[in-house]
Image (cartoon, rainbow, N blue to C red; front, side):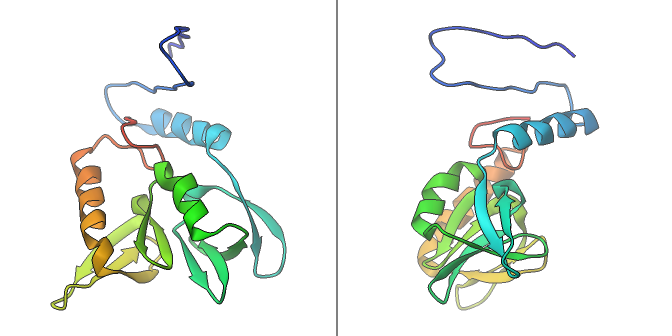
Length: 164
């Protein structure tokens, strides 16, 4: 492995690049470790009342329910103390997209879409959770998914333009 530091005034913020001729376990391990170090964290509370540190890359979605904002991962629900608007702004570069007035989904965790004749789109997440994209957000969802498909070197959890 070669590690280089490139100090130059043209860089406004720290950039980390992982370069290799193909995706393999080593690259996955390095990317996972970098996520652990640099991903933004979010405080939440589980259903029992325990405080937890949540990693956005592991979350499926955020949704509003009874005046609260809920974060959902593969198995549990957490209450968070931020608004959906704050979460949308903060985690846009982590793959989150607003699909309705009351929900943000992690585009990297979408398993499939079910298109109906009425024009609605059912979004099915990796853990089996199902939700619907509102008509006004369908175009943005489609373009974000096409962008992700066209950028086949995209590493889930990295911001736009970051490559494997």
